[in-house]
Length: 454
Ligand SMILES: Cc1cc2nc3c(=O)[nH]c(=O)nc-3n(C[C@H](O)[C@H](O)[C@H](O)COP(=O)(O)OP(=O)(O)OC[C@H]3O[C@@H](n4cnc5c(N)ncnc54)[C@H](O)[C@@H]3O)c2cc1C
Image 1 (cartoon, rainbow, N blue to C red):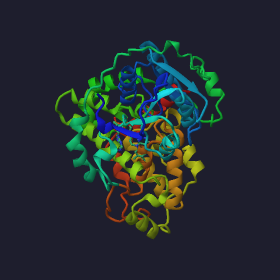
Image 2: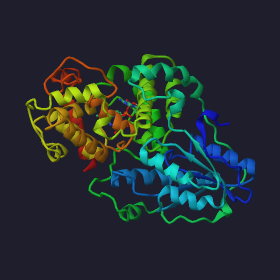
Image 3: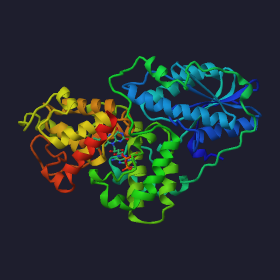
Image 4: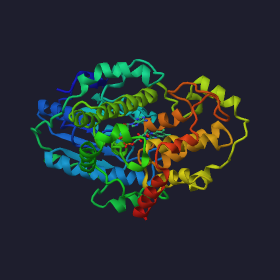
């Protein structure tokens, strides 16, 4: 049984007796394995003597471009194959997702969906629920501890949410077996209008920003995510605590693109890491994966203006305003930042890593963002620039983590530090940043990665 604390009934009605299938509208959890919404749908379908049908609406998502769609569609092609092998139907159409779900709900006994925290994801679910004549159940599968179970309010910082999450996480770190499918969906004959066997054509037909190209660094999908997890656990986890702040070592899981698209479950990741026994790398990694990541979900959920400057804490906005007129040591426009045309070779390398490969190590993300704040005409302009570049070029952009990570640059979830020009009491990053790791080795690494994409 899927734990009831992961379930939320959005429309309370009995299963429709005339239903031909149980519908799972897949949106956030884009995977066929370790997916509680999918297994819940299969359980319901088995109990009702019906097949399971999964649908996916391919729609315009704010700020998503060819890089993001390419990664997502490759993952979905794998989902389609994996579901077919289990006897579960899959239909993908170019429709706003909630509209496709509503159309297919007409012939469903009940509808299941997964959960996302961004405004658009919440609005889609709300629109589907309005006036729906079917039972609608949301299953929360992309966090370890469900957001409202972790906390009923907007948390200030990792230190305030940590004890709440740590108290609960053992209850939620449970394996999830695939349920046998009692009634295969072969006879449903419900057609897709997107051909996932021809991805270049699908991508070319989408009206999106094609100037941000797909990347090779991250092969998409569940199998690739699991391979990366296995490699990380066996090779890098033991060094994670010591080397995670040294970008040139590459010691990190690189799982964030997969987590963002729901191609791997955070519970599966946490279990694989925890199974390596008790050592400090495990604890440090679980702090990032569960406490920090789920602090971001808390922020997106309880502060739905997460993309507005005004969401930043009052003390941070005040001190940045007091220092808004401070002379900047360098001043760049968004276009100059985007092109990597600053005086700083390390900053430019970070921007190149992002542009060419869709990713950047956490430590460099911190430096990258702090310097945009340092070298922009105003904190408000810096906020716009940082968010825009983050969400345009990162594969894992447009995530609750994006808004929280960028927010942290401007004082979110942090505390006041000793005052500095431009930053005021918001934490800065100065020349000492490069005493902690081999920055020239990082530049060489980025050059190699960028060459591999060319
Ligand atoms: C300015 C800035 C922008 C950021 N933008 C994004 C973004 O767009 N998308 C995104 O997913 N993350 C973002 N982060 C958070 C973090 O940098 C990335 O999640 C991490 O670097 C991804 O690499 P990894 O998967 O190898 O992480 P690992 O170190 O292997 O950690 C495992 C997982 O834990 C989570 N995690 C790690 N560090 C953090 C953190 N500081 N906060 C929250 N969760 C964390 C991620 O889900 C990550 O995949 C940003 C951070 C900053 C400072």
